[in-house]
Length: 75
Image 1: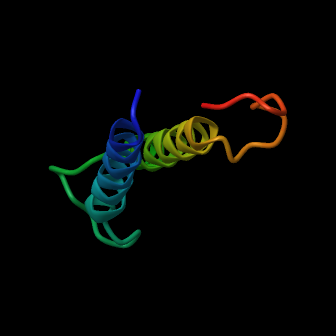
Image 2: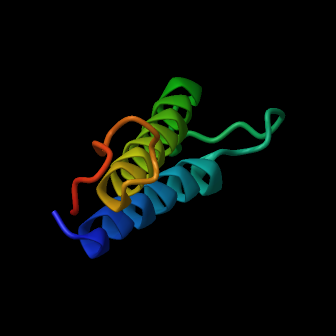
């Protein structure tokens, strides 16, 4: 995968996390048509996990994680 694919994964994680955060209602507000609190937690956690996967993949792809590339090997 190229670096643009990893950047896309990171952006998708940000979108999912933002959707979860924007869907949350204030605790005192009773809403019949809204997401349940656990749904918001799952959206935010899933978005952050997707961002983490993308950042780790991008760093690994770029060779910034020590020990991934062998000494003297060219990518």
